[in-house]
Length: 186
Image (cartoon, rainbow, N blue to C red; front, side, top):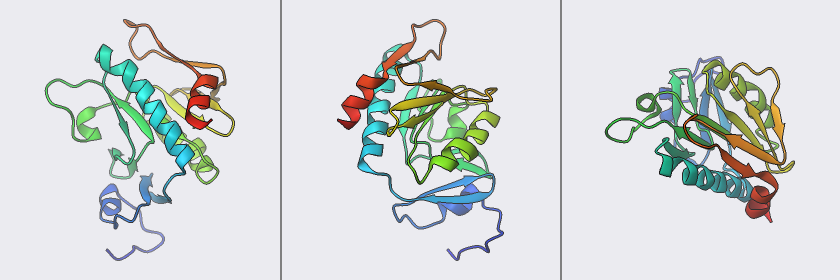
């Protein structure tokens, strides 16, 4: 595909047509963002978080946990690839796209120096605007999680534990953050 002019308004369809070169292509309000492959520590943290969430979500039938690369398309001008996300249960077969899944229950991004501004500002604004109930910015260097909810003006900064309760019927998931980061990184 020929590259569009710099002032082109990008769409999810245009990004999907780009070559599979190992980079992550996301369209954030019509702007193309290209991110290189993540570091091994980034992947260790994302993988452990996905396992932790899956071990909570699956037995309670609260949904499904997925890892990037996987497109979440809110609109033609908003297509993201969150590191880890939880989709709600659906009746019948498993959804094959975010459009079939409906509203996400949780999005988690593992931040790195090269992605910090995009994750903390651009993506946060989109996820709050899209009313994602929980958006976690996982910071492996600081060993903490910033939790954002749709109406928050400031994050909740968590360094000891984080609790997530997508259903009031079930006890919350409680993650001991020092133990979590030690397992992922030490």
